[in-house]
Image 1 (cartoon, rainbow, N blue to C red):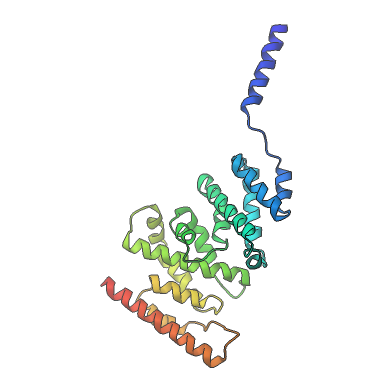
Image 2: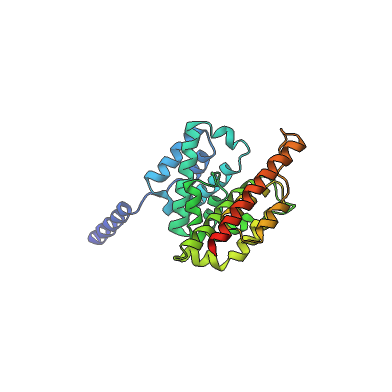
Length: 258
């Protein structure tokens, strides 16, 4: 009996030594909604201990990324070096979660993040086959879209245009197979953006990368982007300049393809 007890005790100790400690999800959750110092420390803990292997921790990170990206005060917060570093870490960890676990919710959070549409991050998004469904979904705009929705759509239109442009010249690879299969749907969403002044400039800009001959006329019908600090005459003058630039770019692009 004593020998059996010793064997069981040894087995339990060995299992405990080999099993990673379960993260305190409640504490991490509280920290990720605490002060910036606590948020930074929570992300360091998650990264250093590779806690994203736990599904609950992955949900926490994605929740935080969504919350931070939708914060109306994001621009003001991003002026802080500490906050910018923290947000960048959130994006990077979100990328790991999306790519390593093919987490659909993480892909949507990454697409809806805050980034420049011509940044390396935007290029990376345009190259990810599993990001495509979230990109196309976010590209849609209609009369019910909120200001936050249109901010996301504006960036996404150009990301999708980059994907179309790249896949025209280098059509190989899984991403391009998917992009080409949904080319008409992507172009439809970009052209739809021309009707809404909140994203029309970005739709026009996107078509300079991927538009066809028909878009030379379509961009001329785009809704004028509002500019509160300018007079109506000044707005129209600047808009006409944008349209001419876009038409010339599309014309050169389509002629080069012949």
